[in-house]
Amino acid sequence: VTVFVPRDAAALAVGADKVAAAIVREAAARNLDVTIIRNGSRGMLWLETLVEVRTPQGRMAYGPVKAPDVPSLFDAGFLTGGAHRLAHGLTSEIPFLKGQTRLTFARCGVTDPLSLEDYRHYKGLKGLEAAVAMAPADIVKQVTDSGLRGRGGAGFPTGVKWKTVADAKADQKYIVCNADEGDSGTFADRMIMEGDPFVLIEGMAIAAIAVGATKGYIYTRSEYPHAIAVMQEAIEIARREGILGASVLGSPHAFDMEVRVGAGAYVCGEETSLLNSLEGKRGIVRAKPPLPALEGLFGKPTVVNNVMSLASVPVIMDRGAQFYRDFGVGRSHGTIPIQLAGNLKHGGLYETAFGLTLGELVNDIGGGTITGRPVKAVQVGGPLGAYFPQDLFDTIFDYEAFAAAGGLIGHAGIVVFDDTVDMLAQARFAMEFCAIESCGKCTPCRIGAVRGVETVDRIARGDAAAIPLLESLCNTMKAGSLCALGGFTPYPVMSALTHFPADFDRMKEAAE
Ligand code: NAI
Ligand code: SF4
Image (cartoon, rainbow, N blue to C red; front, side, top):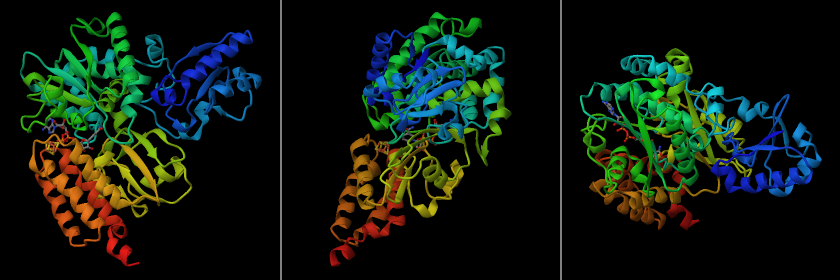
């Protein structure tokens, strides 16, 4: 009998290794033949450790399983899908999973992440096989036509970026995968690296062939040790199997890659700062232009793409541009892996076509708050994203709709807060975060964020005159900062002030 116990960091954090060991122990004691596969996570984090059993009907789910539950699972006959208080029936029928459109995460949680055989069995490498048979310019065209936009947050058309690099003349070009994933409440990059590393390798190899790059780097954070280990092992397997190296899948294209580990500065997720860090320099932002597409790593034309952008490419190459493009709304095509986090009953990864409303995501899919209290605010797009009140719950999840509502979808992380949150404290936190993480290159951010903390503190002491000052400071930071860190910090601050003015009215509170 095959039993799946995730090796994803979220599962490990709640004792997946102990669960796996308990299953081995219990099976041996009962003389039962059990094979354990350490799969990726299905993304239903409230059910971790989610143990699955392969049965003739399909995979049956049990969770959240703790090691002490294991004997009772055996007693209940879970190896044949027996009933148990932790049983959820067929995994594929769990509403949270059933409602999704999994294109990028199609294999995550399904396969053994380090089994190339599994990867091929579930349509892996089909995109790369198609790409090696195509002219590079046609690959770029297919990605452009798919409508794929940068999933790191900015939503810049991936195909246009690739074309810029492809058209640049140089003796060396690079593919850099931004896996720094610094946004609060986000974990999609980590999940795919731990749960389906070959899809990222495949996406990077396709990008390399498309633009004429021969070397790739995955830049990730030291806080992701499991992702680093899985990626490194997967790269070695890919090299052994002729996916990477002097001849990619027997083609005339050479491509190899390695993993580089940052030291955990938020700003190193900004692409130029990341490139400096990769070059062994301090992670300080570079002025643009020149764009990294023209002068990137070591001054050479470089594709810098987020993990999600690159991992979405194989399915586009396999199923075609139109297939991908048909998902979504407006100018936001395809699917987006949304990460539901914070005070939610059902937190996890939800991949869906663009177009759900924020309210559907929080209330229907996320199940509302775990505390049972009303939702007060939802921060979308990481620490630089705006706070949305319930009034804005009909905002459609797409790049333009969020921008029109004064926010951004960023890396698609959603962090939910109930009515106990103090939005003045959240505004202060945004400024404090910026002050700590600022690279120091430009004045509006380096000085502005520190003054921002002081100004919020003045408001907290009941100095209402400091409110227009905070607004003015935010405008300066927004207009004058060199990169998104200083430039976007005003989003959480101003949205807190605009949508939750009562929390800033400390004079009134003091009077009461
Ligand atoms: P940006 O709009 O300056 O650039 C987006 C991308 O397009 C960059 O790679 C840029 O080099 C490229 N680009 C722009 N014009 C181009 C052209 N004409 N030809 C070729 N390439 C071109 O945005 P930026 O500063 O790179 O990213 C900001 C976003 O990052 C924010 O929206 C935020 O949501 C997101 N972010 C994501 C985080 C994460 O953890 N994933 C953390 C922090 C911020
Ligand atoms: Fe550095 Fe902040 Fe300026 Fe960005 S906005 S370049 S992080 S000082």
